[in-house]
Image (cartoon, rainbow over all chains, first blue to last red; front, side, top):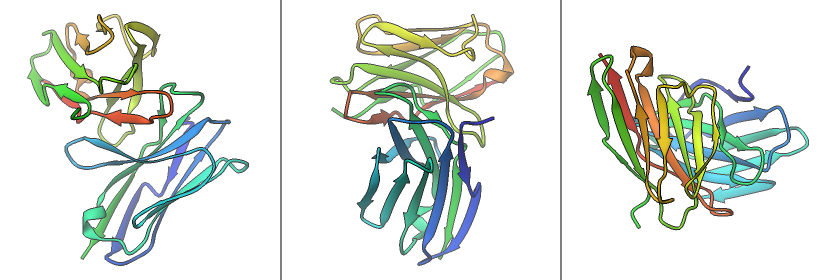
Length: 109
Length: 112
């Protein structure tokens, strides 16, 4: 059983829609990461969270430590947001990340 | 510094051949990680280094796999006697305490 669960696995949205991707994990962590992966494989780090909320442009990430749950929101979605979004957790310090399976997002114009 | 570099980007090899991949991390980062990603899955941990010391190896890393980071800078991942099941994207990442993780673009291996 994967220790990091993401939902949905696939998501198709119309341009401009508000998007939410969810991530839950099973045990205490030191940090949670949201990552973006485009076709071709390269992974870009979007957020690193240990509590609360972070915002960067149209992206917002929140985490609820008590409920072991995080969400990634995209406001005013655009076709260039189409990618796989991956949630990953670190159990302590800079130990190896444990990844979810990813959410494949397609934004249609 | 241009980030984490991986070479080659793509490798096609015949079953039974040996392959070696290289990762050049961000120079200030003391930790370096190798992950493997198959289609439709998230990356899975293989091994990681702090400076030149290999701290942990996953059970996924069979005896055919070996990784080194001889001077605490670049790292190599070698797969001996490749099998079709080794076909995957091999990702490298580096980190420093408090600095988060930076990923390379990966090496896509196809074993035919």
